[in-house]
Length: 311
Image (tube, rainbow, N blue to C red):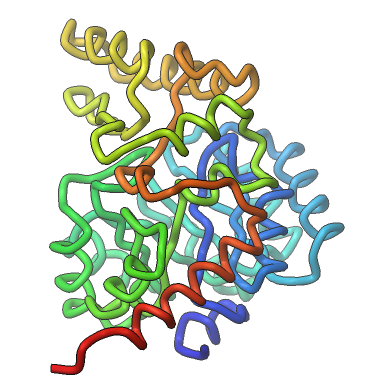
């Protein structure tokens, strides 16, 4: 399949792996890219030196493009940017802010810039500053989210911009891929299904929690402190909701989220850690190698498309 996104990114399939902090490592990203999609290394929580190591590791594992994601609320963005520029990373995705101050520098180095956006207004702003494409994420997705559903936001953004739209939020099979394309997207970004891929650093408890999930297994925490985040329900999310109700400080709440995420990833603590996952987790019934996830999404999408009734 060839379209504006595959040509822009130099990939075989219009499948992008979501940038999940502490989960989207070089190993996972390289495996996705080897499968024909675009793997993404999450720079959130990394030092400049650690990011450089991750980029080098990914290049030891694949000769395909691998992107880096920047969460712009981080305090070390200038240092991370220097690494990205020096290493000539081909694609940068951004979230939690605007890349306006450095997008020209990235473009001058031949780097494509793709912001994640929650609504039409911000999508237009990103296009106006030169975004090469935008990722529109619906609130069904895991991790940090906006307030609009995927089905509502995808077509409205598609109609409002002239650069490619990449759809995210609630995609884990061919039906999701086809629906995104039907609503104006030219590619999809998936997080939850890749979060439990064989190359992911999460442990067996996290994997099993996703596999055991149903359509009501996630909850959104942090809405009242402007860091709305979707995760699997457990003891920690219950505690976080109480902290939020007690009018927690935003910075302190964010710090607790980061600590709980690390506990989930590094200690495989499925009760006292935060396991970011989307509402689509209920569809995911197995942990597969990342390349097989890419193949499955494409094959299932073709199957769904072929079976559709012509109107």
